[in-house]
Length: 147
Length: 280
Image (cartoon, rainbow over all chains, first blue to last red):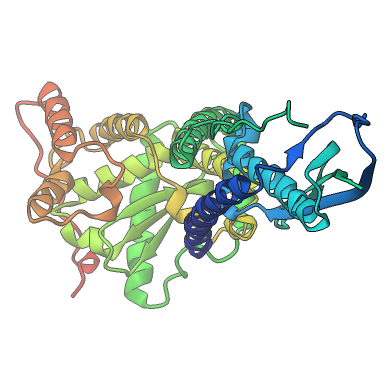
């Protein structure tokens, strides 16, 4: 009984704080994306050689932890299958945040565009039972500015 | 790079629009319904299998559970009461065609609980609180015969099998209650889970009525205990024994109907209870 109450409290805490953090994070992501919209991002590997250009490696990485509520819902989802919508929003946040951090670095170097952008995703604590799962997303590319 | 532009992308294209709580509620209700159905099926199956456990094995299991039955009587009057209950039980059991390897052991408890119960290994516990509510030996015989019938129908071992299956299923599913399983095997948690189904109670009632009829030649006072219970229930008091039992009014009606069918012109009077049985 005590275990159950403890579990429900954890679930409630996970839900309340997880949702609050997620909402706040999305607001901040949308805000900063507007500020960094002038930096163009391409997955194209070849940089068009119209001018003399300088390229530097820029990267941005983010680690987001899964809250207790999301983990529980995702574990239930594992039993029956289907879209794990609890994790979808988490990964969406992580990807966009990583690209934003990369763009911020590009802005600091004075670049106007980033080429050959790649995204890497890895899970931290993979396979470790009873530990809080977290996901890392790394975005990197070549920031280009006229010489 | 003037030919490139960065259009604003609509929000939410990579995320399912389900509300997390709706997702949660659907998953929890669906999966718990599935678990309940599976556990129910498992417990019914285990009950069917448990019925085939030899009675000698059931006795050995009951003996290995340690001190879970009432202490043997210490005072002279308690010994006298226990002896009397055992004698009455043996007389009833004689009419009920019990298999030879199925002895019934009665335990007397001086507790004021208004209850009697049949548990594993042919052990029956009778509480003083029950004896105090009964008007005659016939009424006591009805209750005893009811418990003997449970043993003869193998109801305690079936209930144990079901309880064991449920406990095992739940603890292996969720990983919770490993301690509870140990406790259960230790027998501490045994008594509360030995509850019988409605149909088991009805079958025990009809066997008991037949036994009382065979022993006394009539079933007068057989409904007495249930009438007492009905009175008390109207006073908002429900003895623990009746939590799972069929509706008391239905039982009284069934017993009266049986009595009417077997009524004789010259009805023998009910045998009074011995004086030493009632608490001073």
